[in-house]
Image 1 (cartoon, rainbow, N blue to C red):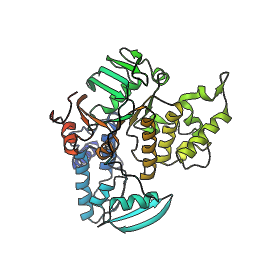
Image 2: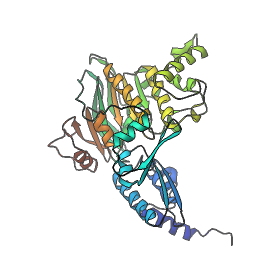
Image 3: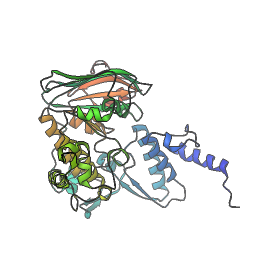
Image 4: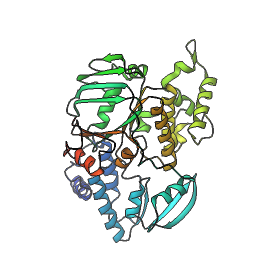
Length: 403
């Protein structure tokens, strides 16, 4: 009769949420109060309707835990058995090998290949996507560690970060693993001053490891962190990392306007020159430096965020899911810039939900669980099974230094 039946809506919502393992969530909870991973699962649940005939999933597992991914794959199998046609877009090629029947490869907006998935090797897909051979980082040796660049002791914020201590060294990448909600993002935000810590100390050191600055209990604001040589690539580039209506030029120089100013006035010509240099170096696909970043692809938007901090020449770069939603080619370019940073004796902290990525790129991997840093593994002393066990709260002290 034109009236919504709220009880039936709640019942149907609980049924859909139960399909993806979120049956314990109150259907009346505002989505804004959920974490990004849970928001992603709600969006997926909305589309798992019985009447669906064609389902398009675009990077559905980017922010999901292994258990959530399993629930999703179970539902995909059920929908496939019902005759639903599924288009599954992902840069996680191991997922395609697991669930896809056919694979299509796009490069620069063109369809370059369509083939049966069976028997296709991952490196073949990568080469077709990029157009050239991409370096494999999985077997790399540990980098030589330089001096201490940042030290945090006893950082605490409610129950989301519980007395965390860690050290970042020049010339190495430290990874940060953990399940969604484990406190990884919250820790990075404390290190950058985006959130206020309730307790703890942060100390900075020069390239030789000599004390340079100490802040207790925390940074007053991100401005102070930037002035101290710290940069942050945020988890959500669109809502937290970019001014979407503004140009590549504006976004690139945003954190270091003093470098493109004279007597307090911005110099558009100098801004444009800086932007053009980074467009060329990072291979940002764009019309020109004045193109609004909202019109760029996700990978090119992420490159603009990287360009901002590379232009700022940070001593410490904090990366929160730096390759989420980024294609293989753009990912390789970002990895090269990370390698260049540590080669220049900078320190990098890298948060990622992709354990394979952390294992390929990092020299050490810390694991967060329930707001605590429960273990730190050195390169060569970890396995994917051990990292997952620590993320679920079962760290083994035999192969990890307990934090």
